[in-house]
Length: 150
Image 1 (cartoon, rainbow, N blue to C red):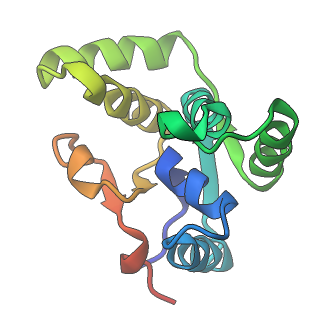
Image 2 (cartoon, rainbow, N blue to C red):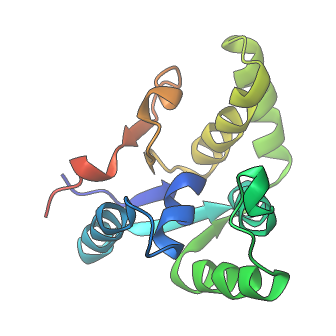
Image 3 (cartoon, helix red, strand yellow):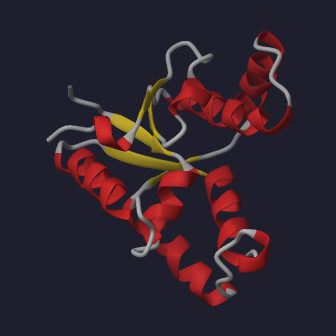
C-alpha cells in the first residue's frame, strides 16, 4: 500500500526521540519504512506543543524532564525531517465542524484538531499508537507502527 503522506502523532514523536523507550525500535522501523516508500511525513503546531509539554515536564509529573535546550534540539530534528501542516482559519473551521458533528469532548478535542488539519491539507493517514482514537473520523486511516510493512 503506497501512502503519499502521513501525519505523525505526538506519541510517535516522543518515542522516536527516546532510544530507551520500549517502543522506540517499532516506531523507528515504521518511520523508516514509510520514508523509504516515499511517504511525506508531517507534523502540526499542536504536535510540537504537546511534544514540548511532555519533554519539559518534570519526571515526577509523568514527563521526560528535559531542558529547554534539549527539547529545542529534538524539535529541530522533527522540523528538519518532516513537513509542517500549518494552522489556518480553514483548519479551525473544520475542527469546529468535527467536534459538533461527532460530539467530541474532553481530551479527544486534540485528536479532532489533528483530523481537521489532515482533512484541510489532504492527508489521509496518521501514524499513531492510539488507532481507536481516530476511528470516528471518516477518511482518516490510522496506522499502528506494527502495521507498516516493508
